[in-house]
Amino acid sequence: MTPERPVLPAAVTVVGIGADGWRGIPDTSRTALLDADVLIGGPRQLNLLPPQCTGERICRPSPLRPAIPGLLAKHTGRRIAVLASGDPMFYGIGRALTEVLGAGSVHVLPHPSSVSQACARLGWPLEDVEVVTLVGRPAARLTASLHEGRRILVLSADATTPGEVAALLRDRGFGPSRMRVLEQLGGAKERTTAPATADDWRDEPCDPLNIVAVECHRAPDTLRIGAVPGLPDEAYEHDGQLTKRHVRAATLGVLAPAPGELLWDVGGGSGSIAIEWMRTHPSCRAVTVERDPVRAERITRNAGRLGVPGLSVVTGAAPGVLAELPPPDAVFIGGGLTAPGLLDACWEALPVGGRLVANTVTLESEALLADAYRRHGGELVKLAVAHAVPVGGFTGWRQAMPVTQWAARKAARTTVNPLPGADR
Image (cartoon, rainbow, N blue to C red):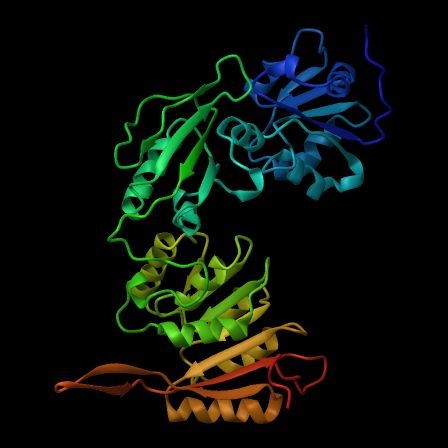
């Protein structure tokens, strides 16, 4: 019996399909594919369709996003169906189409995602699982999710991903973590490997369509990296140019990163402020500016090591290079405050509501911050930290250099309202 054909008002229909192919999709999705004049998808997805789907078959171009307008214009007036793996709106093609065309021009018919199917096979509650995609992304992204006892599902790029995951776990001190690979979920060739630790992982051939399940366990001698700002200083490679742990935690608290925001980290040093800004949420972005090429390379290594390889490192002197950067939501100045025009350039770059935080240990830069505080308001504080050290047979305090910090939020008027907690 032919299923009733629904009215699809959207210009493009996106149909999710799994490894089980035609037999696994519901009647509504089948009808959309049978009615389509044009079928767009990857070769594997198109090969899952039966001969009854008579629309013109077109392999999806790569890169897809810039090709979308021209591709659709070429087929104006025809019914277009785009095939997606699993749920099109979960790390899928649905995002690109809705962002380019608008949600009103795209009708999405989802299929269970590989993540949902993996959780069903493993008996893992989906809400307790972290998902990391390595499709078109470096394996180093996984690092930020490594915490004792956490369960992670890694969306694989191809058959080599499980081996890359195992190697990264070993390198980051998580060799005791247990791994399984789930292949062709929902299909006739579905297979789940026996559990093995990353230390014992044998990089055997597997199906390119796979997902990697990881139960995180840290080796006893591995440095513990927490989820909040203020990572141990030992987590960073540095030459002494490092915002120390306690001051770093206080600085990030005032910068107050929020999902999707962009930070300028001017005078990057070791990159610690930008790195820990990005670690607060996967959508947080940062650009760090460092004039010393050696330090710039070191920042890149630190970012990869701590799970935020997407950190943009610009080698050059501020304020000269700032004009080339995208507008920031917040700015941190950790060095170079005495460079002519730097502080004013950073302030002018901020939108209304943007935050600026600057730290210094020198009297010359402190005078600049005092003047900025007079002109723009905000909050001017001095941060002092002392550490207990041996004094002969006793213990005493060794004072670190005090840090002067100015923090302000840009308002519509010249005068800036104090940051939260600064009201008097």
